[in-house]
Length: 492
Ligand code: NAP
Image (cartoon, rainbow, N blue to C red; front, side, top):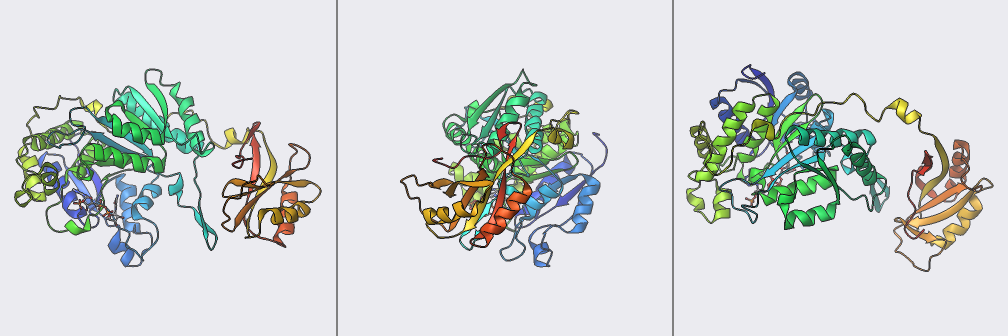
């Protein structure tokens, strides 16, 4: 509630983190919001102490208590731990929505100044290739699983539509690579199309992600809310930041149902650490998203206005901006000086930016809907048949030689349908010879067209083939409600 004392976990972080976090804390205090900060640690020093997660239990406990985090950037030092503490934090607390607004700022020159760039990228934050499920299939072939679920897609897409509705936005663009990854990115696109029917007042469009990159460079003002999968979102949200002034100005919020984590998009910028020169705007704008989440929208608006006045007047300019504008870098404002200027400008209104109502500014979490189209009962009701199996084999043998052997090993119930190398069919021969990398996929299906294949038949096949080839993993081929749950090989 506005006016109360809020409890927030603050993680100063690594490199320039403590300086930018301190700047935001000073401005919030000067604006009169009472926050009881629980200081917690994560990142480089934690890894170095031998905690391979980078996020100590005391920090997890604090976040579980406060539900709100203001966080500086965290480093994963090379040689300590293997997972990023940032990603660990997002996943531990299931902050599934990464929200990155990118809008034009006064006094920050860009190629697009005056075009009215004002978009919000809503990036799925816990699935996709960032699930981090990677395996070396052979000593020389690496694989990363791209995990996209209906539940994860529905949560983030509904979040994006609810955000658009709450903030009076007119359009939501879904950005995928569904034309190539028909099952993973395709599922995301299908869920988007299904849910868009519930938001008739919002224009819903789908664009292929590469076209989104192209359109953003050409005419960024056409975008309003963009919702996308994790890797796509990681890339285009940095692109969007670049359109409006770069990392020094790019805020973000990670929202879950219980916890929200607010941080700048940039990293620890180690070369500037401790020098009092870094631009704190990104973290200050992130802290405004936090204040709105805490229902302190009026104060957030006041601080935002003070930031805009400071940028607009250009009396206190940090080094990065001085460099961009051809200004005097030697006389640029320090982090502390820039913070002081924002504090001094509290209560003033920017003259070049039209006033916006609090509800039009990024904030808060979506209202969960009672009827989800996922869950155990829904899944169980989908009719399914296992119609075959893909067996991945470590072998450098030519496909025709391997094929002849696998035809014999297939047995009476199954037949070898095809072999592929990196997704391209190489058996039966197509007349083309894609490069071999020492990993083949052999697809076996029932000899009787479309017949079900039992687990016992699959297990028996695996042990027969395993006597001749080193197999690395298997994938069952399912048909769900009449739809194949697997794709064909290229050229099949
Ligand atoms: P970075 O720390 O974001 O810095 C890259 C460059 O961006 C800086 O050298 C600087 O450019 C510019 N920059 C960053 N923050 C700025 C700011 N506030 N104001 C003005 N300019 C700013 O990226 P990095 O060097 O690739 O990563 C360093 C460490 O941070 C790595 O360990 C990485 O893993 C970590 N990281 C953490 C997070 C996070 O916690 N969410 C995010 C990204 C990276 P110039 O050199 O041109 O001045």
